[in-house]
Length: 252
Image (cartoon, rainbow, N blue to C red; front, top):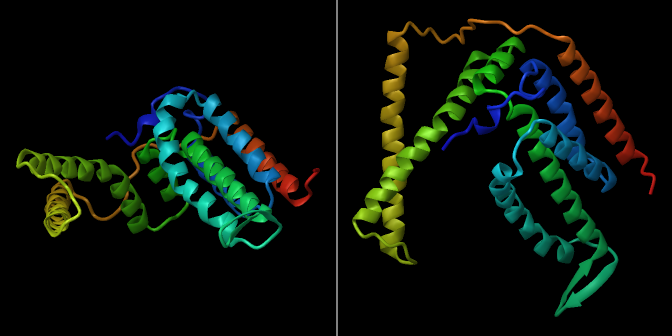
């Protein structure tokens, strides 16, 4: 499991200052998330997809992640149209699907995909070290920066540990089913994963103490703002304002 897969590249977005990325990313995604109509999220999805192309990220690498996200969103298309009040479209038994319910589900789908693609294109093209470094520059408390850094860094280690435990269960001819034995076995798996995670965290903590860690996120090199960073910041600010206008004052 490699979490920094999209950070490997040499596009304009890969070379941007992470501080500028964070400053422009947060207003952009909040603007999309708070939109009320379809036009704004649709424009946001187009812009986010353009950034993915601009970053040179392969659609094949994104496909699996998009499938996972849209699998959860698909459930909304089942329940929202029949639970949202509005103009009836069709009825099945005692359930009536409404036009407003379909539009609401479409709006959520566009927003979720636009935010996901923007996250990959803007933040995913930086290494976790750079993002943690940028958070330090914004005076985020050290404990929160460490929490973000270690969660991101060691989630792949936990995944490997889970894989080893699962393989050990398979070697012992374990076959999951809908029974008490399966539930008990998965309970043991989660418990063992927690124990091993705790033991690993203790080893990492002791190793950090041996290296002189004092709870501070030390920075060995500093960012240097370039003209390209300023240009990207201005363009993203203008884009965020424009899609807000599109949502606020729809043309159609």
